[in-house]
Length: 469
Picture 1 (cartoon, helix red, strand yellow):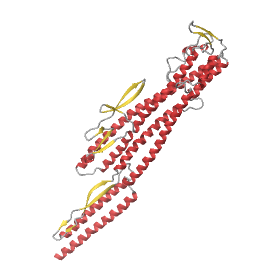
Picture 2 (cartoon, helix red, strand yellow):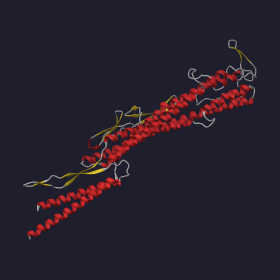
Picture 3 (cartoon, one colour):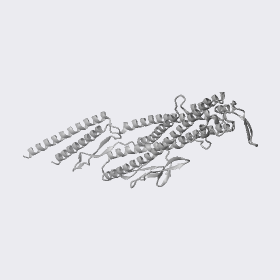
Picture 4 (tube, one colour):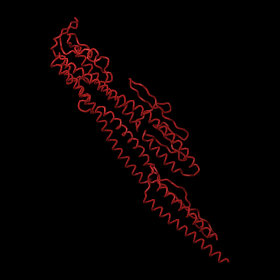
């Protein structure tokens, strides 16, 4: 009788094990398209045998646990490369916005406006007394200053967006950290009681990947399935708490920057999406804008220096052509004195006795100052007299283009790398429909075989009863 009971027990455990295995395979099939889902497997172990006087009889099978396939090394690589990919994706996105500021059609870019301005002076030199040509100079000057203003406004808008994005990304990081803390608590509660929190681990892994896009994080495994998160040695998440990031906006030289703090300490984020925003802000946007400001200052200074030693149509010594205190791209402005009376444009040269304070014009037909100003576009007056206005602009335009192309190339390279790592990881932990259907068929056959064991045991038990009767 005990042998038959043991056979029934073996059949029962086989039925349960096969059913559990089919359930696990079915769960895999159901989540074949679920992002971040890892293949699960029923881990079967032989039960301890039943000892008799002469030998040990088998006692069936147990489902020890529903385990999840793991690829810790591949996961770490994916997180690291995802940080780099996100960095270059965001750097490319922001640089394309900056590049668009310089992309003009025909005569609409800054270099064309500079050329038109100095060409207007050359036209004036052909007829220095012409009011038509003087109007042309005024219009060219206003068009040039407007273009400088547009560039400056564009720079400032991008900077404002960068600061807003940094603050927004920090809030998103904090939300993810709190979600991970909640999952840590749930996972440890389940696994402390001996259960495997596979689905919760999948959800947390998705959050870790999302978080890795923002910054280069370090993970540490802790007891009962918990993990800790840190950045450059500063803890962001442990088993007890979340240490939120915070932001503070500061002004430096009339430009606003957003700093990030954790544990009341300022941190420099140089990786991921946030690192890309910082890199574009401090290493590119600010220097680009500084170069445009330098170009505006150079034009204002050189044109004013020449204009002040010329003579207007009244025979008076020339004044400032551009407002002298407005020497940035955002402030450059044609002098009110000139815009109110175009006869005060100084196109003629003359003689000067600076000691005596006497100045005599060569006459309204003289064009010497107009020619000197027109020639400024071809003279190396920028960067310690090493390049021209056009050289400065072309150098800046080339730099923006190079930085943008570099970002795009790195984005493409890291996209290929992440795709390869994802494919490798998926080949290990991903769900294969062919494999799952084969497993379901295998476990179904096992279940049917176990059912036949129950029938066999029942027949044996009936035979035994009949013998006793």
